[in-house]
Length: 566
Image (cartoon, rainbow, N blue to C red; front, side, top):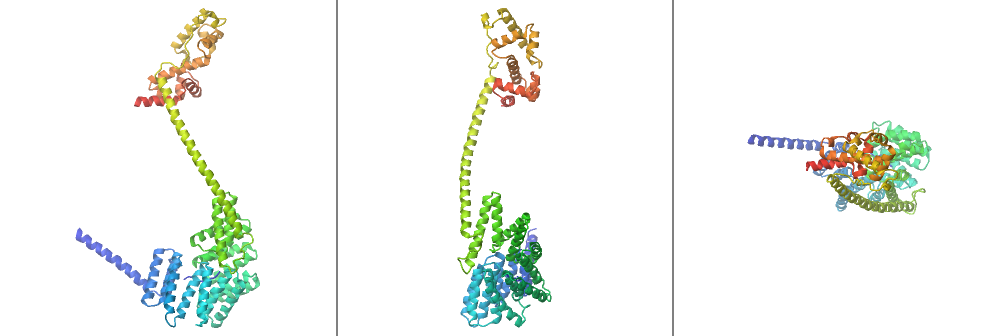
């Protein structure tokens, strides 16, 4: 980790022409205004507007134009490097840098320019955690420095190389290189002339922290605080806050670590140091996790993940982040999300292995790559099986839906046939009344009694006596001047049904006839119709209607209305 700051017709025609000229003049004036600024001012302006792609691009355009006009290739390259920061695409510094190096190699006395290109690229790669690229650039720079001696550039190379080695797990070698660079800085008193030199006062204690030598770390931190208190630039003072957060984190004082880390976020955002921002949120998440505050742990881990998704900076601190998120979604049974974070975790491991000096070493005792791949493959297999089940479920669902549609069409046609049959007949399927010729047909009743009761029932039916909601076997027997036992036997054996079915069928036949003839009745509610034809409630009416017609009353009424409209 390092702390390096990024700093009518003719009238209309003439109106249009004038507007264009004004707009062109304004744009030209703005471009001229940018060209009048110094390189440092343009750099500062660029980083202030880096989130506004259009404005930032215009600033870069002015920077490179200014450098080209002045025939300053290194300044031009600096301008192109800003595009790398803007678009997160290192092809700008790679291609342009290689072209300039080839050009300078063919000229004499251009070693310093070549070294500056290597340093610009090394710094960018360091900020974006591309450690193998940092090593490549610093080694190339050291090759040039064997012939072209320059103590200042050598110190800068040592800083970048040391920070790269630190990220590669070689803290002792890193500390040696950084302290060597620090000797030059102290000797020449260049602390405030270069932010990279100033950052040494923070990066040295960081190495001691990594080595577990907290007393030495705090000694250098105290020295740094004294030194930076003399400068108006507060960024390094805030950097000390970040460093203290790291130390408290390492010694297990997580509540204090959270406070220091949270205070350092604003300066890391201002410095556009997304690499350290990812590390900070990851460590805050881990601290909360250790303190059993899992809600805040999840929120901070997710913030680190969002920064990774946006800037694609593969930090080793993301191992804890992606491990936690993978297990979090595993517990929730969300296999796809678990797989997403396992893939991210493996990606960090693979990147880390490529950057390590010894590729056979394992980065983590808890999570090793083969086990992660095995777990990922297991989840993939589960998801594929689930996908197969989903596909089968999909096809089965289609068959079921198709079956339901076919059944609905069949039922609709069947209902239509029933409706037409009922509409076109006078009576429902009512068994024909039997003519009694043998007394044995109704035991214990004389032919005279049976025929008398049947005649009285005909009168009862013609007068619609069945519409009385209070009708019962006993009161009907009283009305017919007979007893309920006789009446029940006659109805059972001549009508082939019980008394209640006999009454309900008469009511439903009456209802059907009324509904066919009376459009006003069709506008009644089911409850009102039920009361109109002798039923005490709509449920018993609907049940009886369906029993004798095989249709629901609402369907019958709807079809009658449709037939009328057609």
